[in-house]
Length: 242
Image 1 (cartoon, rainbow, N blue to C red):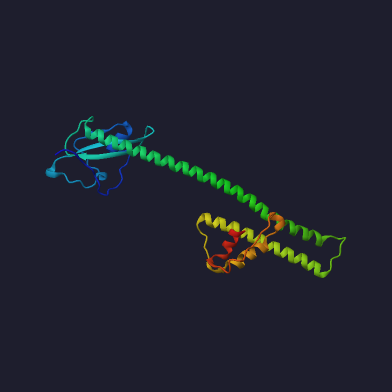
Image 2 (image 1 turned 135 degrees about the vertical axis):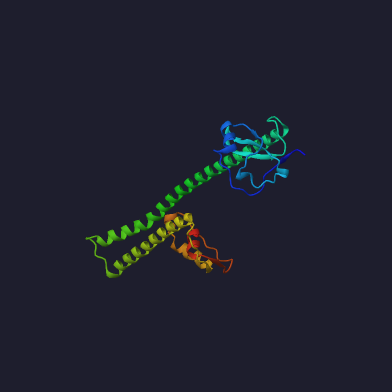
């Protein structure tokens, strides 16, 4: 009986720089070894009657570069131009094409992802700059007013300026927290604290905190749908709504 016996048993990987595999890699051509060498990568192959087996090895190539070696064991000696060797060579060629296609798809996907990440980072920087400009401007205006020597404000007016500074400072802290959350998302360390939240109230709070003059849009909150409760992380959902 003639044919090929493929080694399907789990075995440690072969080194591509030593032994028969190394010879295939260096030459870039198929080899036939009779008898087959004793290699751990061949697994525990039964050799009936103590007869030696023939090792066939062909290179797995992609763009003239050897990626690996496809090996098989036969019971009979085979000429390098035999149908068995040609079949194994064709299989190795298809494997090489599949590996190269998978690599190209992965590289293209990685390139698209990097472009999207760069685009999102640019948008993030622009949005953060916009978000920071409004509270910083209001804080600067309040401080400048309080430090003015030619105007005397009454106690309530000074308190109003200070309340504004306190409010905008809290807003700056929130923006910084959001940036830290983005860093935690990228590192996989973000923890969500979900609880039942009235969505209507959350939307109303977000709209109330927005400055219509700064965003240059009119926000309309339609409450006709009735109450709605969702199990979410209110802090993160607020960031999404903003």
